[in-house]
Image (cartoon, rainbow, N blue to C red; front, side, top):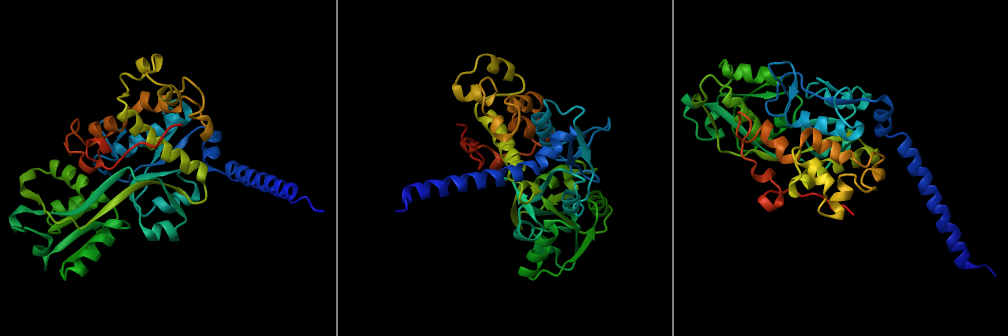
Length: 347
């Protein structure tokens, strides 16, 4: 007689072994292993300036929300970003081919999660880290109170972006006959708009706020109230690489967890020396487990917070109250402050 219980046990064991072997294959081929063996992270930059997110300061150093996320990722992987991070300037259109070819390891470039990108380009998205509203800025002397008032005029937009699609859809849906003028670089869009080549320019609200601040006379420009669409921005890795994607998601969660628990770059050493809970002990690498599951050192989150701070610190210094742009965090706050973001559970 066949011992069906024994048969089931053997089948289950075979399944587990197969799954483990499959997992090992994925892990071995993960971009995570490639980056760790290389000893450096190739992270997306910008081929111009994307104010507040990826820009070069007067000393020639990169800064911005996206750049700080690249720094956080590198610090988590290697203990610090200095000497282990290369920012690779790429255009909006180049980011996908650059990721797929290995010229960059990850796209952290305020990239919207769309169905076509998700299903057709072999890309995998992290959970969103920013929610942006698309709006149009126009010259105040036009007297426009909405995008419909630009009918018969022209609007500048960056090529190869979801912004271009959003604008085309909005104009078509609302029967607005405006000429769409497309440029490869964001800097070209801004300079053309300020030179009077187009009556308006479309971007998401944070960028428009930053661009208007840098105008010779900000009062000469008005951000029209129409919200053309909302877009969730995520970190992008190649599809079929769950280990590398896990690192991105837990990096973001770690930055929110630190914020929710009042852990900053200034006090992280003190809290690590006297952790108030076993969860924070694990989070900061005092006790093992938080990094090992991801193939990282257990103090990886501590290294990130030490270098760049929590998410509030990143936001405030680059685009919020500590920046020239003074953009309120709003929907991008933690849930307890009226926003939509929250950390995942550490167990």
